[in-house]
Length: 113
Length: 110
Image (cartoon, rainbow over all chains, first blue to last red; front, side, top):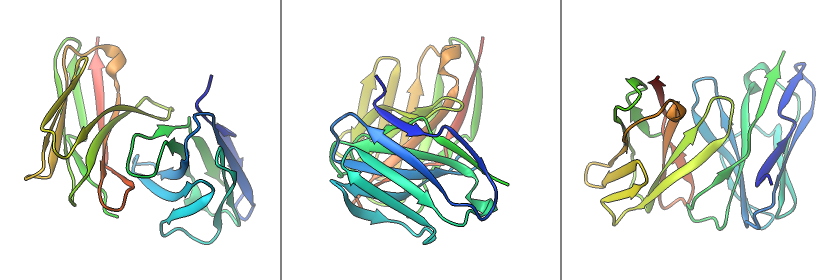
């Protein structure tokens, strides 16, 4: 059984389009995260939600908007996609939000043409 | 937040040898964690060491932490081809979020 799942696994789209990535965890965790991993494998946190509430919002463009309908789901919507948005996006979850062990999804590889 | 650094960036060894990776971080921490990422996959947690601990073992993994030098090392003993992956350290400080290092790409040759 998958603990943290993301869809889609691959996403190829044109510049200017709007797209969403979905994430679900079945671990009963309270905190969920979105990370961006660039081509050099740098992993940078974008957002963190604790029990459906935003607690970390790093400097990301307004075009990125997270939505958490319940504590098991954290979706990422991206408007007006740009070439520089091409990266691998990882969802993760942890039991609390105090720097504990995080469990990662398999990643969504986004390519903007 | 600032990225931590790891060295070496890449390490290639023969099966059966030991692999040592180092990590430096910038701020005071509550804990430091190591993760593995196989090619095309998500990160998998390996081990967590708290700021008041100096050494921790888990199977073939040994982690050390030197808070005075703001550094940690990960030792994998008797490496196997299946250990080939990228290894990341992640520090957790007062911001309660994980700051990841730049990663070490380990290749274990059969």
